[in-house]
Image 1 (cartoon, rainbow, N blue to C red):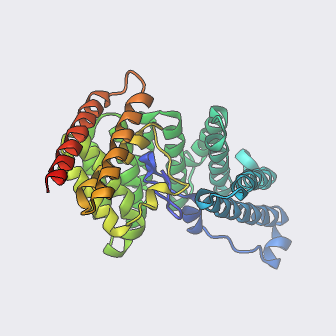
Image 2 (image 1 turned 120 degrees about the horizontal axis):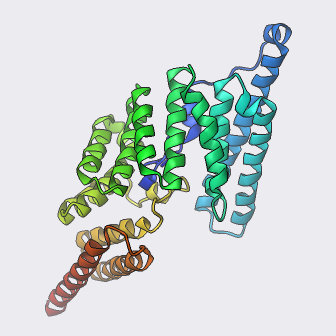
Image 3 (image 1 turned 180 degrees about the vertical axis):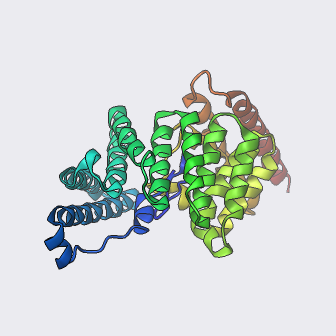
Length: 345
């Protein structure tokens, strides 16, 4: 659920609001000579906060490079990413940590703890719960609206990782109540829609994705709208409208032809096996839209494999298994019909 400077969060839960973007609204200035003389503790805290932000920026750059680099250097980048988070956490602890009077320290600390918990293999729920405790101190205080919105957004992502849907939805609602900016609101609407979809509330999910898209200016669609359109596609499909879902994917590809947005390192799926549903619809959309026979055949094959992967990975109580079976059989029949028609030509 996060976006690189609001990384998309459109998290399937997406995702996703990247922390650096929200932090930029309370950008730090270097402590002045006067502040150092008047309040050396506050000046030191500001310096540590600035250093932590630099490590968070390095973390994001390393994560982005690791996500798109297929060479052996990727392991080094991933290790460096973790080192940067730990260095940021060290500075934030020195700045007062969870007891700091500065809410910026606590919001950033919540973000770092959440990332450390989420990115671990396996994930570390204890770290995420610790992040939640720190972030709640911000939401219960009197921080400025931008910081309060950031804290609620971080809480929502933490709840999403833990699978706590009701708390996640509530947190996104609180973040929206404190967030005035249109493209930030769009990400929050879309992330909350992902939560609704996870709860089976498809009407609310579809409405949420559409609210997200309405919140954006045309130029913002390239950055923030693509993942909302993908989420809308999955929700629309699960609501019984396959053609509408594939049309939504076609529109997303008008802004992002090669599907970069849903393959960014910031994107995570909740539950993880939902990734296969997105892959299946994407491949099916390709199969229907191409005029090249070989590309169409390969796309149908990828779609079928993705539907099979979803059914294999999904737990027995997954609410979408029956529809997944229907989609798999429909995709097989459509492929056979199309290929037979091509052979008759």
